[in-house]
Length: 190
Image (tube, rainbow, N blue to C red; front, side, top):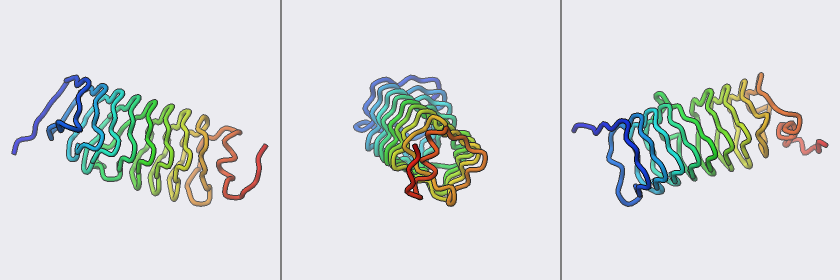
C-alpha cells in the first residue's frame, strides 16, 4: 500500500478528532488551530512541521515520527512521547501545556522548552543533555535517573531534582532555583 506524501500544505481549523488525518508523511506543513484531541495519529511522519494553537491532548502517537517539529501555543495533555518513533526525534515547545505527558527513556538532547507548563511530566531515564527550560513551570515533573548535563534551568521554576539520582554535571541553575535541588532534604532556603 502506497503511503500518502504531503508537503508545504497549510491545515487551518480542522477537526481531526472527527475526520482523521490520513496516514502518511507530512513535510513542511503547518497545522493551525486544529483539534487532534483523542485522535489517532499513530505511524504518521511529521518532518519540519509547525503546530500552532492546536489541541493534541490524549492523541495516540504510537510510532509517530516527529522530526524537527515545532509546537507553539498547543495544548498537549497526557501524551505518551515514549511511544513515538525514536529515529530522528526532534522537537521544540513554546507556550505549550504539556501536563501529564511522558518522555520516558527518550534522547532529547538540546530540546527547547519555552514558557511552557510541564506539570507532572515524566522525564525518567531520559537524556536531556543541553536541554533548555526557559521560563517553564515544572511542578511535579519527575526527574529520575535523568541525564541533565549542561541543561539550562536558570529561569525554570517549581522543579525538584535530586542531584544524587540524576546526572547534573555542568547544568545551569539560578540562585532562587537552588531550593529545587535541595527539596528532598526538607531544608528552607531564604
